[in-house]
Length: 170
Image (cartoon, rainbow, N blue to C red; front, side, top):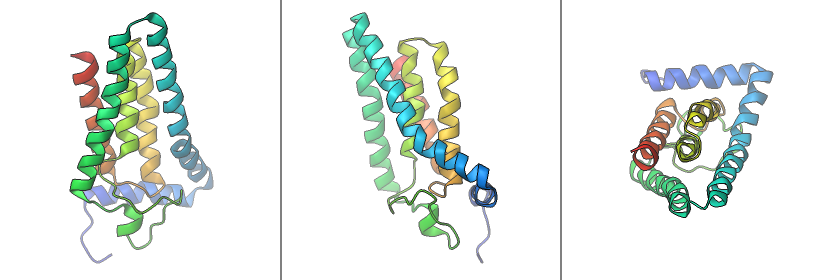
């Protein structure tokens, strides 16, 4: 590591090394990283069923379309930026989840978790604040498992929150 460390890498290494040095923290990060996908899938599905049951079909369309468009935009931006994942770029970093070598920035998990949390504004606005907590830990776990830099996650959260505000709040 001859090059000067920037804040993005300093924060990444602090989180990644903390998880690697503490078995409980490592297992927690892995569980959060793996479990976030299922958790947000279930939360999203419950929300869709609730809106469907209420007969608000235009709201349901928006509820389904905004996260989809967010993921499409995020994926497009990721292909444009072409930033490698930490376990690809850094010498002593491995993906604790065995992730494939795809691009890293912005984080799809962070963007999806944030926009799904924001989607609950359609159903029960106070739920957004509660769901932002697991969205935060989703991003944090992705850094701890060696799959994203802090900037990747922060940009993903930002994209998800902005899409949610534009799509559900305004």
